[in-house]
Image (cartoon, rainbow, N blue to C red; front, side):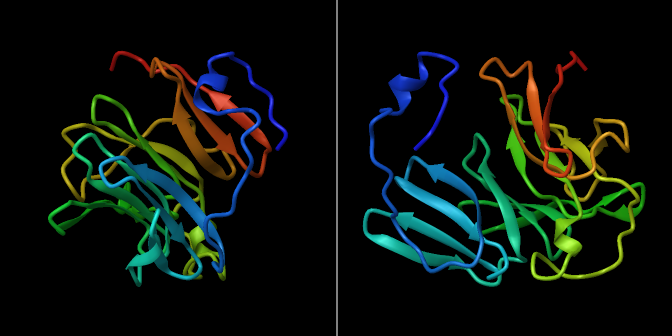
Length: 207
């Protein structure tokens, strides 16, 4: 598999000569893989199939159907599963005891396009992208858009479920914001724009 390592430390994580092995198959469109260390298991979305699955050394099984056509997944520090849902235009939280909470669905009184990917800062803040893929046929639930832009947002550590998120970027900077992550020091967030075929990097301010 072709790759370019920008830091020698990469090879302490992944053997450059390790073979690539298919662990499971038979899905429509997989997204949002996230490793759960306590279970030694991989959770992932089959977004058009409207199902969430879990893989471990014993095989793969369904853990949620329907999944509201969830896409991006991650865990917070308390090991709550966070999901970006296409069908509901929501960022949702699933607690280990089974409780579910909707964290955000609207901005300025209008429904979000469809949260796509998300990551969690060590402060507890949640950052997510909001393109409109989930309003397209096949990838979500086809319906009119209420927002006229695709943004990148933040939910504060003390965010009240249902409250509006904070818009972090100029409204028309991105045309399809997609994957995002932090640098190891967490001072630099990176955000991919699929349509523009670029990756932007920002700096996190004290506030």
